[in-house]
Length: 283
Ligand SMILES: [Zn+2]
Image 1 (spheres, rainbow, N blue to C red):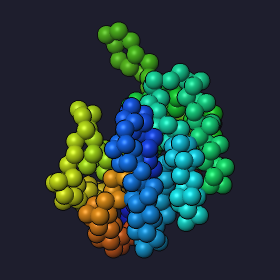
Image 2: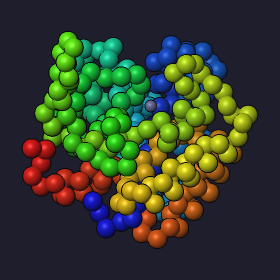
Image 3: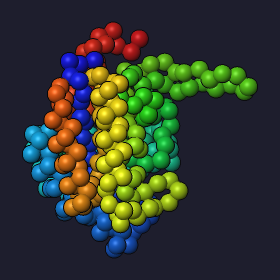
């Protein structure tokens, strides 16, 4: 897809308070874990990215942007991409399509007002999403989505809803004018360090070494087997920002970026390049 051997896309899902509030965790301890993101984690992550001169993509709930406008603006002013992550870290499958569309608009408006950037990308915050919502992403002007997982290292055209039948095969929907940049929990800090669907797991006492080993193994596989691939690393400031973990991240990025032919890029850049390489569009 590109002349690069590999592209590292560092993403920061900047959930702050909103994720805990969406879980119904409204106590002082839970909210303080969220507050660690804008207060400590995000500045540390920005510093690491600055040392690598690495552009990155920040998926920011509208609630984070409006509650912590200064650090949100600092992210944008440092040249990073601002993208949509719902307003309140909603699970969109609990909303109607029209309610989902409204949340997307309100969040886009808040992000644009505070950062000056109108998002062109979306990542679903939590839970699942209706297949029909992907068509709303197109209508709302998004160039790409990064919520799905049908590939690992390469973008593809997202498609409309599958049609199913009783005791028969399923038929995929038509391709949409929406680039899907897949992501995986394998490369998601939060799902290693903080949470899995079978319940919260506090693994901080284990240290970051197992996660570093997983990321390095995936990176080595990409380099050996997926030339031109995208390494979509999904970070959360409140999780990766802890001292022992941010040090692990910097160590990993230093070694990864030292490989010849490797670059950092935003997801918006990856989507643009995918579109340029497929001028026929999603037909
Ligand atoms: Zn999130």
